Length: 130
Image (cartoon, rainbow, N blue to C red; front, side):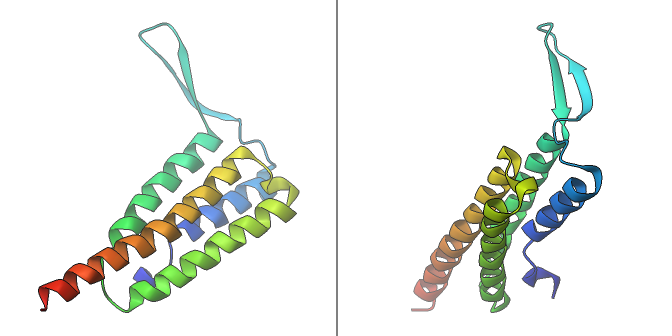
């Protein structure tokens, strides 16, 4: 049952909680690292959202290799998450940021990659059965 839920909804919910409760300060530094070059690398809240989104997208693409019937429901729900992201990006002022735009693009990639991987996997399964 948990395989049906698109994981990027977690990122969408987390973004909304952080932005609406703590304010839209995504540039707040979580930690800094002194590099060998002498530069200082700062890891921000926005960076955390993007790294988390990339990890969740990877898991979603791996889940898309399944040919179970639940994967079709997952793809439909992933499309719903993408539409929610687009609507929120356009309508909600707190979502009008580059970070949320990239989250929306991750949702788009989830939809496109999910359908593409599932179709390719289904073709292989069909070809093996011949």
